[in-house]
Image (cartoon, rainbow, N blue to C red; front, side, top):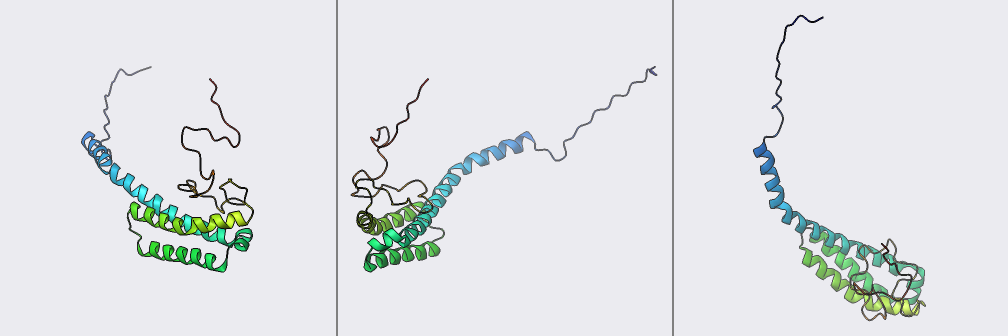
Length: 172
């Protein structure tokens, strides 16, 4: 049974909520800083890539097969360049993406010819362009530019089929 009484209660909860203007302002700020964030992301990726390359290269020259194929002079040349690059990295924590990329190219310019010679001496498959046993820890993003002068080194250019290994075909 009902008494017939009726109470109308309206509850509004505006406390702690964002207004439409605040939401719009936040979205506009996010758009505004998007480019800065992308630039920062690129810078961090380049810095990390350079650091990873240094440590991967250092691990490579310590591998038994490679160590045996490297002369002490070559090993020292690479190790000194790695040490110099890591020291530079510590001193340039806020460097620009281009600086990190340039330093990596510089290190690759010293290390790649020596490492190619070592891989060939260590009995790497001719034209394989890869590292015996693989790169310790892998190469994030692959080997930038491959190994210069390596026959068949690096990935095939985009849009072309490499004739080594299986191929994947898309079927509808």
